[in-house]
Picture 1 (spheres, chains in turn blue, red):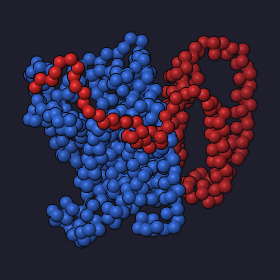
Picture 2: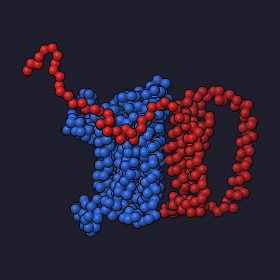
Picture 3: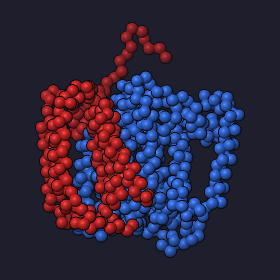
Picture 4: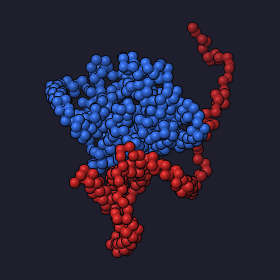
Length: 383
Length: 207
């Protein structure tokens, strides 16, 4: 399918690609030429920083879909996509082109305005949350004091895209998917919020940079160990919040076709897709920052501090740095894919039971335990 | 006009517009979405007042949870709005009188007399290192700890009362006992019977 489309529009595609490349190079060169002016202008400089975060994020989303298909393929003893480009590496680009060229069909009697707005409502919070995520202690777009709260607020807003899409589509399947998703996200948000309360007690701050700094020491000082139940609750709630398998009843192919985005096609559907994967990466990044020490090196406390902070290649590789954050995020993302390949979908009442009757009591109990540990100064975490 | 004032006016205009649309728009889902917009712009205004904790909490609690449940209910109900609007003109004078009373009461309490710039000094700008969250936390958990705790206990009582009032036990519903399901052993469910294989009836076995 994709190849035929590619062959049909080969000339136009090549021309578009060429023009885009030339324009891109021109913009970058202009940017370098006027770099001092851009740096002086706060608004422009911030814009450049935002592009530097969102651009690679979109690339990561595209190749996360590829990784998902390949990894699940290998888990099921298949090869996965291997036709477009060398070993299938151009598959996400071919998919994006296909979706771009498809028509967006608005169903009869759908609420046209809300139907178009819904995908934007879904992706905007997923991108906006990245504004406060620190990559290292200095590499952060907005180092605000209440960044954890900000992230929590924005991830809770993402559900509007799903609800509005389901309602505006004027379709029963879509509506059912939206209702399921709304109830599910509201339920798991409580457990997620309680898990974050545990993190901010342990870190003593709402600022994500401070939370990571509080995990200094060794990998046993990272919060996954003292807050292990909260770590599990947080990550599983994160899977439920992003509507990923085994909590993807809002899509539920076997029951409601594709759930809330059943009426969406082309780029409107692709935006939902982008939002889902951007949210996955966000949850993985937050889990890495709050429980796995973020950019802190796992060799802290094993190798000497002098070696870790030395400026050579070995010091850079083994010392703290953004590459450790990316490595931890990759592991968490692999878990997302692994869950999808392993677990059958939860039944809806079991999802609700897990959220309300298991996770919320666990988090409350562990908050009490943690409070006692803080008061009694139990080391090495709470002294 | 400095940038802060421009931002204020943009947010204020959107806020008033959205709040007005909440009560004038015909479709209840649209009304709910306008209320969400009103909350968002209100949070923006609070950010301008350096109340970032309250602003983010407003989005978290009202936009992220309360309005989702509102939308949930509004979408499920099949509301016909026209009968709801029937007595509009008849009740208008009464509504205006009540609005005037409420306005004058509010003016008497939070008017210029007690909150004017000559009574209360204009609040000064805090530096970038000022933490609204820390200030709020330290006041809430020291000076006002008892009112805070009492308020939260009252809320808890209200939640439990609401659940207790609406919970109905229906007899005869089939629900699972997960503990029982987990505790089950293979010997409870499957009985392995050992026996000799039987010969096929009629013809003899050929190999």
